[in-house]
Image (cartoon, rainbow, N blue to C red; front, side, top):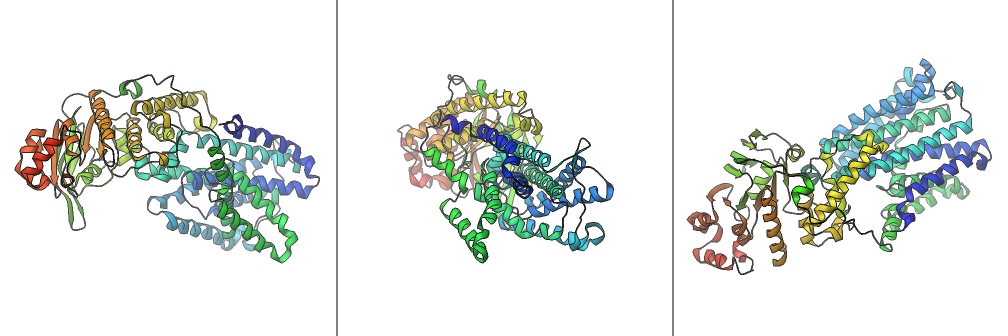
Length: 613
């Protein structure tokens, strides 16, 4: 990639800073300067909304409500209490942030269009409170005579105020960039693309969504305060539902999830109405037609589509292999050595879906440092058992223990932080993120620095970023994917996606890995590579449970095997014991002749017969 592309954000900040310094002289009159100040305020709001929409994938149509909360907070405090500009700015942001937390709560239960309806309702409620609470908000008359802003006791004229808003916009942009390129940004992007995979890496989906709502609300509140001190007057009609739509369009039109997209979108949607005034009564038609044309031909927004086009014609940097010189998994992630005994115990586990018993009083003991096979016919309950012990399903009865600790009621992200990792029957990639970013996200829980350190890019945080970046590259080297580090995960061949899931799980420093049909869809050579990888992991003390239909693979690598049928354990023991068990022969293989066929194929390099899978 070119030097310009790699340093685009820094170049933008430098150019924007020069333009902001020169704009009061370029504008020429007070009206134009006020217009550019308002444009910067909209950019601040759009940058905050981008964290919610672009990073976390949550659509909010109530941003005008949060904008209004910041504005009314400042107007009331300034006119009735006499509080100055800077304290009003801080309190407006805090008050809007509190409502952001409240607005984030519904995301625990609702998604998609239902969440959009909730945010619409929030915006309508705020607007009606502004109308009906006459004694506080002035109803339709609004609040006027907002005093001029002061800074350090000195009044701010239009030029100084423009500089202040410009500096605020640059800070908002820098925060946006720093969050995107941090563990929080990767975690938010991960939750938007696969909640179940993000949880399996120790990421709390609820916490990430709450953080996104708060950051979005705080910036909306700040924009509202800045608007009040610019306009000196507010009323309910300034914060309508159509404004929420316009703010969302700014993010989508510019390119949701990109750093420059909200800036471009806010600039265009601020400037276009001024430009289109010459069309008179056709103004709205031309405005809508232009928006529709851009969204039709540039579905990822202006900046997002331009970025995709740029990536097609630029070469990606090769990963740094200086730190990837054949390291063992223990050297890369520091796998904790565990003692003898059981790693995981499932005691009398039952799981019902309505009247259907998916699991019925299942007992399973997984020995530490062993490879444990879990087999059975289709629909036997194998993946369900993995979901029941990894926190994805809540069991109907029974208890789960992980190294003696009762984990029955723990959630998936809590178990991941204790060392229980897993892959999935259907690969759960963060498809729009690179292969490197997928694995990098797996180190989320290992960071010791917090959000403030990430926003300010403190040395301690930069050191951790570089450390875990190198570790992610080492893991890709370990599983043979280092050449694909900068490819999007969705573009990998299926066999490589299976390896990537394992590498990402290893980043969590697991004591136990649950592999759900890792050989599904792989060629024989890929299955051989997978077998060698599983054995290498076991040699380093990682306990592994393998759910698999390739019987010869399970028989070859497992020290102990459990067989399920209709949600019940019908046999367990060594590979030899299981193969000789009459119940297994009847339920799984169908006949002794089929079993002999499978045993004969075990060392021949062929897959199990179709009937056995």
